[in-house]
Length: 99
Image (cartoon, rainbow, N blue to C red):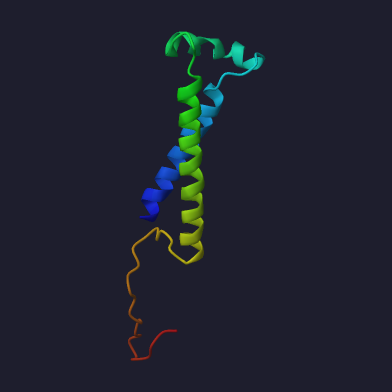
């Protein structure tokens, strides 16, 4: 569950970044990097409504997963990098237990 939420969180971050960068600005550097091409891609009116909805959805998923992950992490639910295997004490040849 933690891994799924972490992957969802990272995907929401990427979508949110892209959605913000695709939004129509008031000119400036956005036009240099192809900001004007979105009008021909999404129709004459642009992608204003669609991109705004994607941005809002990604922001909601981002905030929700951030809160859930922080609560899970604070309660001690973490990913174990290697499966935890119980270790029995090692006995020396003389019969003594090693510390």
